[in-house]
Image 1 (tube, protein in one colour):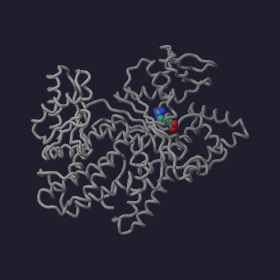
Image 2 (tube, helix red, strand yellow):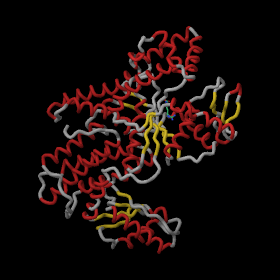
Image 3 (cartoon, protein in one colour):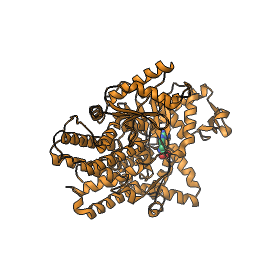
Image 4 (tube, helix red, strand yellow):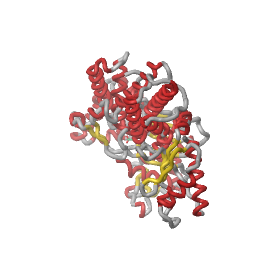
Length: 564
Ligand code: ARG
């Protein structure tokens, strides 16, 4: 199909050039709607005005010129001037080989890498449910790039520096356990909360905290040891969660990593006149009037650096170390101003910059009110995952014989965690997201269990048939076969589109539609009980569907079971 499409596009371009004298790019899209053929183009609608003709007349020129191309069985004008082409089975089926290749990560091309900055929690606190957004939106983007052959450097830019560690150290001394390393992440959080409660009564604590941080910055041994222990405790508490979510980083470079890398940038900014003395002695950057950005501080009036200073040094380090073509920051929309100021400051410094982009996401809330109004203000990610697994477990039990598995516990984990992950990634990240347990765990809708179940169903067909089929050409295709085949052939384009826009939900939606196409094929067309070439072809189509589903799901960090 891909070759034929190239031929059609090339021929159409030549026809239009000859007839109208102007060069146009023609794109034939795979069409999935009934009655629209297999490939369709709207080029006549775009071109008509420019060449002083009507869309239908331009379309007619294309129809006349293309109808003799080998491999097509029908070509027709539809509606205001679309050209729809129907392909013969052989041409469509010939795409299977390419589609199968699209399930294997592409060979790494020689190009500059893409740096992706995601998850990046602040330490000394457990991961909250909201952390899942940056974490898996970031990971799925990294997976898409990698699948398409890009070199990716994934970085966890943890928040491990700043006055809060001075405060924590003060709290530790006053109310913590003697042996710091014996403390759990929850106890650390409790210390931090207690510090702020006591601060209401005793304002002097604020200065004590600041002083402690200053001492930490100056290299005080005891404080350094304390701080390092806190990092260790935090990282340990996150390890298991990252594992459950299939999230991996090439580097964990926290903000503290840039402690000694800011000085040279401050000097450079001063020399170039980018940083100026603001009120009360702070060092600031100002932006041009038309940018409407308020000035940003790079050195506070007490001489301390801040989040922005560290991000400037971070960018410099990444450029020097990896020479990337892009740096993506997958961070809450609440930090939009920060990133605008960061990018603008980097521009003023006059460096040669890669493409920089802030990948935003909206807020998440639960339809189940008891989840959003939990005591305290932090709903832990672990709690939510555990709750999902518990619910999945109940569903497995309730379904009894209808679910086949040798390991209900592993399946519940896969379904539960998957439903939360898919609950995020199936929604447009740019919008606020609502979580609904019933929808997330449903076997019918656009959910992880539906996808997982469809995959297991395809695998079970293949197991029972004892064959993966063969790539044979059948003489005709049923409507369901044709639709499913076109759907699988779209896979690589869908991954590419989702990567380009950094929108994993478009890939999720594609997988959902693929499941629907497979299930409707499964419901009417015999697979293992068919005979001859039909059987071989249908089994091959089933196995390719399974392969695409698994590959796509894994890109979205979702695991799928062989049996369910
Ligand atoms: N730690 C920050 C936070 O929790 C996010 C860091 C994002 N990355 C960056 N390079 N600024 O808000």
